[in-house]
Image (cartoon, rainbow over all chains, first blue to last red; front, top):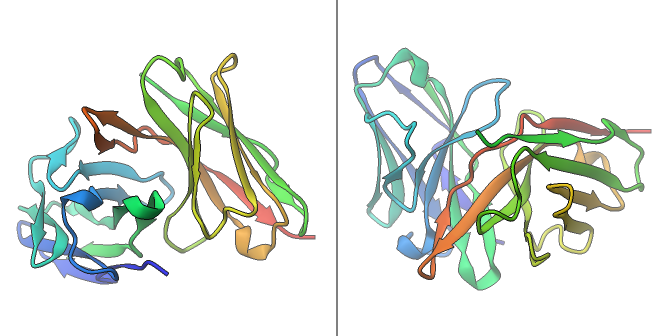
Length: 111
Length: 124
């Protein structure tokens, strides 16, 4: 069974920088996994932030950036704002099985 | 602005079939996207259920494949989800969304927009 692993929770101070990571049980995450990132606030549908490693949607604030880091996909928030407190999910594609798998989510607290 | 709206029963009995429809405000065929379903059990994470192209081509999550059917009705700009033999474990918020497209052979995992989601409870 394919598992995508994220940090369960992280805490960051306002104005600070934090990096969330996304690992695959099958090995290093590469561009072929088309890693994407989503933000979900309570009671709302998820919203896409980043696709294909580092591409931003038009509504994605500049403080969000995506990358590959040490065999994982990574989402970095620089200059964190209180409104960034949310659950963040990564998503990977397993082409051999034509399967999309979400990570378990990271609850980001801004404190 | 493209909008998606899920509809269907909020309560389904165990062993029965869950049926949901997603209505797209624009044309489901005007752009080369896969459309699909994602669910989220209460207090838990997201799970991709499956995708459908306007031609009817589908891809399903292997963990659900034996119970899932996703279909499309281009005349109504709708696509639908059927999940058979449901149990309490299928209780979740079900989202429909525009999922992916392909540009010059490269997948673009767009995953936007999403519907607001609909809670389906499996209980007798």
